[in-house]
Amino acid sequence: MYKKVERQALYVWVYSLKWRKKLQRYGTIYYTSPKMKYVMLYVNSSKVPEIRKELNSKNYVKRVSLAHRKELDEHFVLKSKSTEEEN
Image (cartoon, rainbow, N blue to C red; front, top):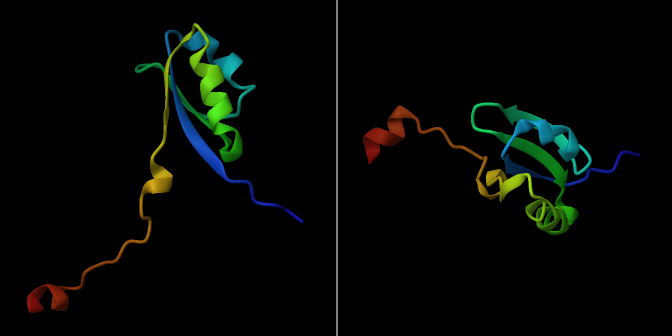
């Protein structure tokens, strides 16, 4: 049976994109921005602190930041016109 693994997105800002291939060993590369020079990397949530610490120690990495998607509420409620008129 398939077991769901929680994943966390990391934004890794690099000095040059030639290091993109080295970042593949830390997780799955989802997106690369050539203009802004960052790589969006998905890693297991349980390993985020260790990977973040290790990436920050690399000389080709400017900074590492977490994606805030997990913190956002993804359950949206549409307001109907009748409820807007009552208020």
